[in-house]
Image (cartoon, rainbow, N blue to C red):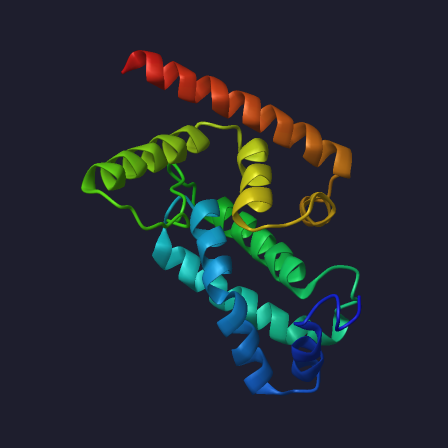
Length: 184
């Protein structure tokens, strides 16, 4: 991975040299999205997610010298976050996950705002019903903009597995939303 491919690489190198301001900058760039990921992984428990985020940044600081550059720094941070979240979930059994509000938009009318909000709620509820592996794959691809290869590396599975999980997740999600539409 080169600096041109990953603009966070110089920050990680500076962190490896002991530059605390580089760590602060890396946190400023990715802290919010990692926190949102952790909230989703930890069933909406923001307090726990904030604690785990601190653990993630500490692990990144301590492990900066060991970064091999086989992925983008953001993907590496998400991999650390995933492991820390798994450990936190093992210690505390979660309730239903709540996705962080990532979708925002300006609406021309109040009715449009209400409809859009209702749609987001429906989709979030449907995503919570997905099996964990499908939900996590869908979130990594669509909410965190990882490529299939990056998600595969993070999850420790083949790219084909990511593709099939994503395909199953979309189909399952479509079925859940159609079922909810009929119920209403």
